[in-house]
Image 1 (cartoon, rainbow over the protein chains, first blue to last red):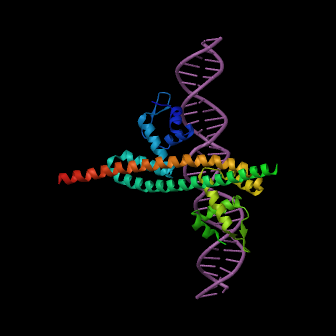
Image 2 (cartoon, chains in turn cyan, orange, yellow, red):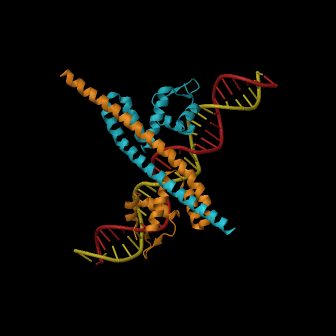
Image 3 (spheres, helix red, strand yellow):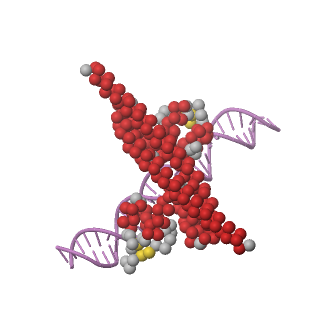
Length: 128
Length: 128
DNA sequence: GCCTTGACTTCGTGTTACTCGAAGGCGCTA
DNA sequence: TAGCGCCTTCGAGTAACACGAAGTCAAGGC
């Protein structure tokens, strides 16, 4: 069983965010110890990781909560959950392409600046 | 010269967001017509695209504004701009890897649900 | 036995980056 | 000249945290 702090390190989320997510009901069946401290088992940790993936695809907290509720309804909600995942799979793909373009843009920019800086240095060398 | 609406279509930003960005000074030398309507030339459009790339790397509006101000200072700020771009190039790379993991996760999930749904259908077929 | 430390708790306000809608100006057309 | 469409500004609302205050509890040191 892990504490909030340990989970923060494992998931790269802040402690604040983890408390926020658990309070919003995004991690089902979260346990508490006798001092009311949140305790995470492997399953809770996995849920948090899933929540992070969904959130990073742009799913709102509300919609993630809805997805979790569907899960808690049991297997009968699988077709609906499948539809949702298909939709976000497409979004994830688009994000991937955007991410590639972003890296290309940054590398292009970096190269350009690098060239200019080197040009200035070699000009100065010529002047000496 | 383009209007806000045309630019919104070209950049996939909302008109609200474009007005917000221009008001924050993220697009230098933005023109206005005689009715005070914003007018974008190719250069302004390119700036908006650059702003979008920087923002999507997680740069805050404030820091983008700072970057634009550095640009307006002229070539002397290029070394500093180079440093900034190098930093965000790394961030863009990390985002790319995250995006790949996200797509993998979604495809994994989708496959899993798909299998379960098909299993149920073939079970039902067997029962008939 | 008390006190400090440290990790947790709740609660409530602050921040960022939009997002929305109201209210109004301008020019074109019927 | 009335209405429509497209723009404007401005101010309030929202989502998702981010942060700090104030309090609880158990362990360890003196």
